[in-house]
Image (cartoon, rainbow, N blue to C red; front, top):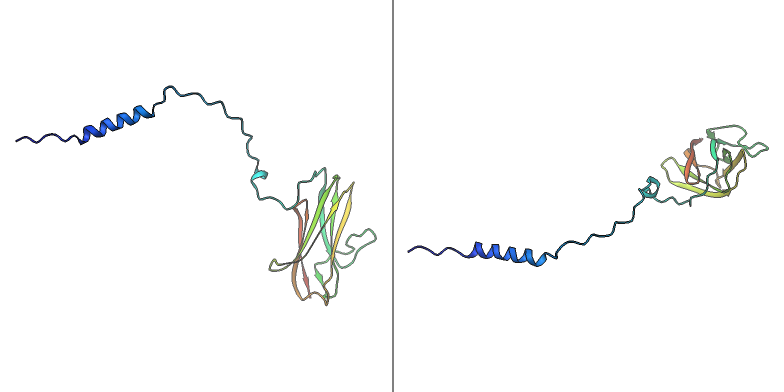
Length: 165
């Protein structure tokens, strides 16, 4: 006796047709155009800087010098890379240009990169200027290698390595 054909494929097709008919909502309404999106700027996607954005003007760093003594203008008198344990190490940043406001910061670090001391100050330069940070260690600097980094508005203005013997 011939076997009746299975209704399973027919029911599957009918169910799919019914599902398609129920989901059809007629002609689609046009969505209003999206507001234009400004292209992303690289600085906006970068990690936030700990220093707020300041108007830079024409200010730029032109020299970072280390030494054990200062001249009458407060600039390093004699550039040096080697110091004695009892020396005060001075870092002079020379800038040119103007800015209504700027932020200088300094980090004194060990050779391994560990921050030993940090400082910052606001400046309002109007022309060439010298900005000096000084560090003396109570009991003397332990012999070894160190570095100092000065930042202008959050950007590195220079890194100088030095040695204490």
